[in-house]
Figure 1 (cartoon, rainbow, N blue to C red):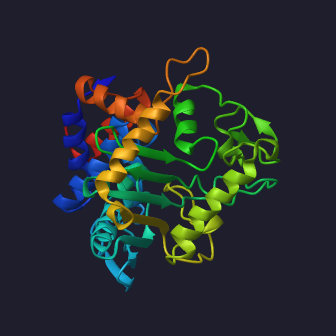
Figure 2 (figure 1 turned 120 degrees about the vertical axis):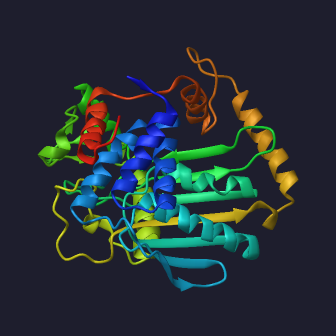
Length: 356
């Protein structure tokens, strides 16, 4: 089922307003969600809207947070998100990072007491229009078993890096530190399809194709799937995100990170406050003249794009290419939604007496 961007934007914003968000926050949260759908990251778009509403109903999300800086230096800051929407808190933090980078060359902000913040790429891309490189990462509830572990200890813990260019489209790498993001499992469940081997394991640590295995005590696997295929590297990446996002900010880390589904109980004996994020901005002219850098970035992209593809492939992609092509197509033709997502949105329309 195809829906126009305008329709989904208007409806999503109305839902956030019904939750009690300010018009500014409702607009910001909507922009982050729709950016995921436009870029083809369907697991983190309006499909998540009902989850945010349920968190708000469970009083785990504060629709009117008092976001504030609790620690600061000329180039760094730590923010307390007051249990607000991560969709609002992370852009707020990134703006601070950008302003600090304008003065100090780089700006880094750690965030605690937040919630799920949408796609990591949105926040890192905010730096691009300022001729800055952007970095964004977040921890998440423990669904991932470290290498050799049966126990779930880490989240999907994504990392996003955005690099400005001159004539070429920007370089945007946005990826989870697991073999597959949890959202992809959710999509497979909606389609009633199996998961590829290497994505998940049973609660005993055995490979499985069951896309619903997390509900049975199973776990996602780190990037690499198993030790033979270097899952220890994915484990290391996920750990780095957890430490930067939470140990540094004062948020919960490891198995104490609050879950996104509102029906899942909060972990006992929390070690911090809420979910943690980490964002940064770096002025490229703090390292070399911006035009020199951007011209060479164009050259880098062209050389990689023109490398010889393997048999059966048309071309070599640059990080950000698939998402950019998706956005171009979906702005023109609309955003496709699976039937279960449409039903969820219709239930929200009924709940809040809105049209959908």
